[in-house]
Length: 173
Image (cartoon, rainbow, N blue to C red):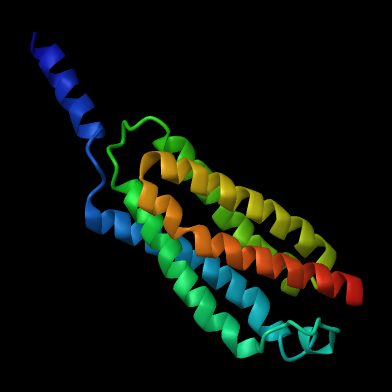
C-alpha cells in the first residue's frame, strides 16, 4: 500500500506544470542561445561579404533587422513559456516542444549557412525548412494553447519575407 501511494505521489509530481521562473529561464535561454549563434555568424559578415552582394529593391536597411528580430525572439520565448507551463502530462506537449526545438535550431543554422558559410543557396534550403517547422509549431501550439500558436504568426510572416529576400539574393548573385 505504501509503495502505491509513493508511486502515485511521484507520478503526480512529474505531471505538475513547470515552475514559471524555470520555464522563463529555459525559454529565454534557448532563444538567446539561437540568437547568439545567429549573431556570431551574421555580424562580422554584414560590412564585408554581405555588403558586396546584389540585393533586391525591397531589401530593408540593415538596421531594421535587429529590432524586428529582438521583438520576434521575445514573442517566440513567450509562446514557448506558455507551452512549458502546461501540465507535463498534457497530450501533445512533448511533441510541440520537440518541434519548437527543431525550428529554433533551424533558426540559428540559417545564419550560419547564409552568413557564416557565405552560402545563400544553402540558406534558402534552411529557411524553407524553417518556415515549415514554424508552421508545424504554430499548429501544435494552437492545439495546446491557442494564444501560444497565434503569437508565432508574425514570426512565420517575417520568415516568409526573409525567404523571399534569400531567394532574390540567390537569383541576383
